Length: 443
Image (cartoon, one colour):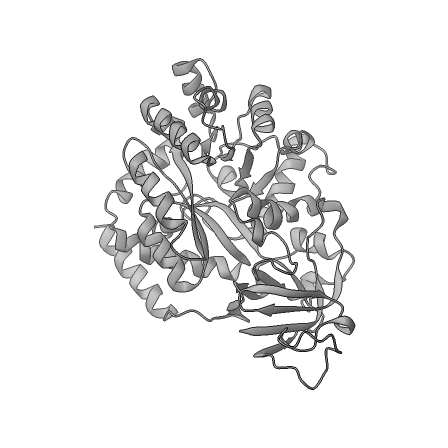
């Protein structure tokens, strides 16, 4: 497909610092899965790049498959959900109002034990639809069956980076090595990163094997890290170190990676993250709902530690909504520091789009520029919550919502537009199948 979107406000986010965002008025041209042009219409190539001629954008020899009048709406890179468990949609509003460890051990784990790979495929597709409505164009998905997770995303045309979920109960290091080599060559929309569930579910010999594999592959490693006070204290009791320091002592971070949550962090932990170039992936709605705490984001940003945003799974959130996450990232940070000036909204938008892409290994999806992947969204500015247009970037974080997403494009294909899904799936049938299977699992 060759698509031209004109009469648009465009936020390319090619700047290296959040405070320097520039909005371009003009058009964006997409050829197949990549961006071909971003800029003023007056100097844009007229056709689809086949002639090489630079003519007026209204030239008679235009041969676009589709031309879209954006009507002054805003186009920006899609959001990246940098930590989620898509297959857990079956537990939405099932295991609520419990502390983290009770939630896991008494509700989540027993239900997950009943899942089949086909269940994960079904429930992951439901999550993908929700991602599209929230302007999420890629996710970092940690769950049980990489084969059906990958197939679900491929079948719907969604971009997924699968994260290893090794622990003492499911998956193994040899399996993870196989999946790493398989899914980094499986499909252009699918990739794989090394990962394990958490320090408290993974024994030392397994952790040592993961660290050795990471060194052998020269690959980053990701995990839940210091999510609750109790898990952090228990690690100190067992090892004499915090989870971050303990994992670092095993050589886990020789080639980078990141931690999900990272709430109960010491000064030493933060220094390790800075020194190793690790990413923090914050999950504010989940952390708040499970009463896990508020991470020291202000300190992290001051130290130059890169921060991305994830929703966590639909059992602990329960909504896969990046707009809510963005608002909570800045709102909770302000509350924690008792300072309304910390964690600026522009910084949060940068986390959601740019840093999220880089955190999960999608550097070609971090901005809108020629040669980058055409993963983008359109925000409807012709709604009351977006008016007046005092500051578009801050409007998105502070007043934006899913209702403003009028288009979601991944790899040059429009998968969601004006409330309609353009995926090879009977959406109502999917909803029915999900509900039917959930009822069976509850028996």
